[in-house]
Structure formats: C-alpha cells, structure tokens
Length: 76
Image (cartoon, rainbow, N blue to C red; front, side, top):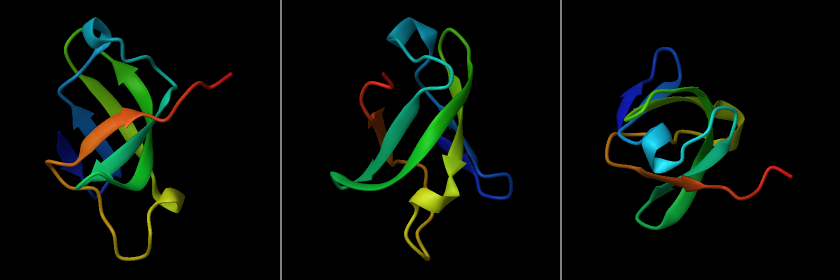
C-alpha cells in the first residue's frame, strides 16, 4: 500500500480481481489493531484507491505503507 498524506488517500495492491468494490469501507489495521477506515473511490483490476476517513483516525495517527486493510463488513 502507498499513502499520500497530503491528499488523504491510499493506493492498494488489491483490486477488482480480488473482490474490491467501489464505495465500500475497509478497516486499516496495524499490528492487528484497527487504527482507522478508508472508503474505496476507484477500482482497477489489480489496484484500488481509497480515501482515508480522517475522522476515524485517533489524534496523531497516520495511515502508513505496510498497514493492512480488510473489509469492515457488509454495507447493508
């Protein structure tokens, strides 16, 4: 995962072929602990772009390369 802190988005090394869907929310984990959320804004076959939901981050915490993302659960 690559992170652009200036514009609050991440580029994931997973995409449509791995089941990533636009407008879905994903949890960001560090060391197995949830640190925030992202919302997928764009999906390509092998990559996806997610906007960092800054309100989900604790003060002083930033998403970093190497953090893990998983689906937050069903949106229904």
